[in-house]
Amino acid sequence: MNASAAERRQQVAAGLAEVQQRIAGACRDVGRDPGEVTLVVVTKFFPASDVRLLADLGVTDVGENRHQEAEAKAADCADLGLRWHYIGGLQSNKAAAVARYADVVESVDRAKLVGRLDQGAHDRGRPVDCLVQVSLDPPDTEGRAGADPADVPALAAAVEAAGMLTLRGVMAVAPLGADPADAFSRLAAVHRDLMADHPSATWVSAGMSGDLEHGIRAGATHVRVGSAILGPRPRIK
Ligand SMILES: *Cc1c(COP(=O)(O)O)cnc(C)c1O
Image (cartoon, rainbow, N blue to C red; front, side, top):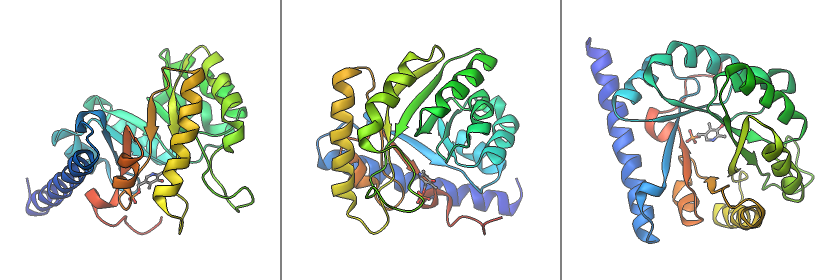
């Protein structure tokens, strides 16, 4: 290993250890078992070499938000046995392609995607786990990602009805500038309603580098953490 690779490894290992401690601390505060919380390391903008490093450090789940980059990295790292989470905005014409490499699609936010994701999962010959992304923004927000809470039941039913998609739960991003505790408690309420109809949809993906403690307090089973582990993302390409 050359000097800079060794340095990078040390950096990433330190970031990972710190985030694992934050998760453990947040769980302790609310009497939860840290084993209930899966860390998804968000590797967008970082090279495949970092993904290899993470796998070597024991990471099992990684997240990506741009289709082309994700597809290339998943192919490059196919030998690592990682679970790939797609967490980005989905274009309808890319959805089938995403479902061919993603193990989990966390950003299902409209019914139009369901048939295409199902097709991609069929092509690959294995089921794909899906989370309904819920918008926690006010209804008229520009560039709003995620389904309106009122549309979640119909969307969840569509996912459940698709042969090769497995409905696992919900995902959300706390709105910029809003109180994450309030946002995630609204997500928890949406999740409770969903569970009434779909008891096996137990996953809640909530919390990132800046607000993972709030996510865990509100019941997150998955946190998606990038910069707190890998450092500031390289300049937007
Ligand atoms: C980039 C991203 C993350 C990780 O953000 P950090 O602040 O770097 O931890 C989490 N979730 C989504 C949907 C993202 O796009």
